[in-house]
Amino acid sequence: MTGKPVLDVRNLSVGYMTPRGFATAVDGVSLTIHEGETVGLVGESGCGKSTLAMAIMRLLGPGAYVTGGRIRIADRDIYRMGREELRQFRWTHVSMVFQSAMNVLNPVRTIGEQMVDTFRAHDPRMSKREAMERSAELLRIVRIDPARLGSFPHELSGGMRQRVVIAIAIAFKPKLVIMDEPTTALDVVVQRSILEQVMELQEQFGFSILFISHDITLVNRISNRVGVMYAGRLVEMSDSQLATEEPPLYHPYAMGLHRAIPTLDAGDDEISGIPGSPPVPLSMPPGCAFHPRCPYVRDACASIKPDLTRHGDYQIACHLTTDELRSFAHAD
Ligand code: SF4
Figure (cartoon, rainbow, N blue to C red):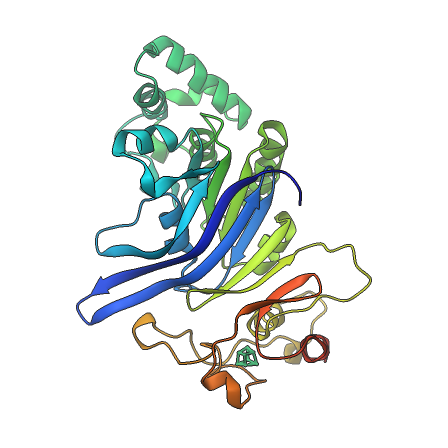
């Protein structure tokens, strides 16, 4: 992908202070997203993907600390901004769509009141009438009748609420929108229509997307590149639709994610979960953190942490050779 980088995360580490010690949740992650690009991030719960998103927004909660690295958005280091500068920067340069619209929208205020508040918080000179007109225009863009400005969140369906949250996220034409499991709580039909709309909005407004999900099929469908996280580290980064003759390569953990996807024509013995559970941050296995679950584990894996290294068009953190990765990925 060409174009200027909109997001540049370099060697970022984030951890939490807990009563039992310091737990590293994000461990040396580097990630770049260019103008107009969609990068997906996939992994099981607790792999660090949401912590990474919150760190990018500089919205980490109490007890969470950035312990290394840096984050630049539109060429600005967000951890060097003052409070007011950061408040203006968020939503005009980077915004976020959270998983549950009900946790974002205030249940006792109408959609219109909340949208007007958002506009006026960023531009206090904007009149209420003008803010209402902009809100109505935004609702039209996400295909909701502007008459709904007078509705309370509980009077809208789950899909409509998530569309409202998306409308607010793009209100100030940000360069980057972070979407953290934006359709997880919705049924598949609504999920599909929201994703189609997100892609149309991206085409129209040109923003870049960091799309976070545990659903590798969904992420593959909408992303230009896909990163796979495990135990706080990026273990794979690849283009999702490579124009190559070669079949794709996968990190052994990503192989497990792909094999766990049910398909209409797969027999019972063709779908398999990944054995074991993800490690807890306070007791991370040494070496490759995936080694207790990996079917291809070898001696070095238990003691030497593999770096993300290039295998053709892919970057994979694994001690296996390119030929081994290829043969295991297409063994059955
Ligand atoms: Fe498996 Fe070893 Fe590769 Fe880790 S480094 S994914 S344990 S083969």
